[in-house]
Length: 184
Image (cartoon, rainbow, N blue to C red):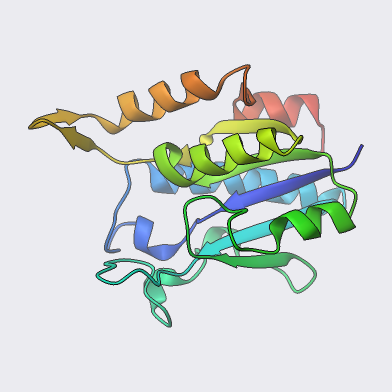
């Protein structure tokens, strides 16, 4: 059993001043930074997923922009894998699956952004592909959504998606609980 940390889309456009600011992005990235430190100290596999928008009309993560760059809190080191994606599901048309298989990784610790989109899509795909998933909920962030003219608060969106993934697709934990159970 080998474990890898999967950091999804923790990119500048999701932070204050970016083109798609999320609620609690700073807090989530600080928790992701703690997970990253834990994995680095243990010399475990770390995979950074970076979304680069290729869809016509995209407004964020545009190629060769500061907004598309990985945030300073979790900057990859030279020995850490960076995988570029163009869809919410980090497995779709990327090398993620082949990388995991080549490194005999069976367990994923997942953190990143947006809970309701890329975190959800990637976690579901990972479980369907046979991976054991631990989703660190407070190391993820999302945004307010709207449906039928009604605003849904980011906290409600976040909690609803974590609740939907819980047990069937992933074990949902906090950063504190994960680090306590997996001492640095």
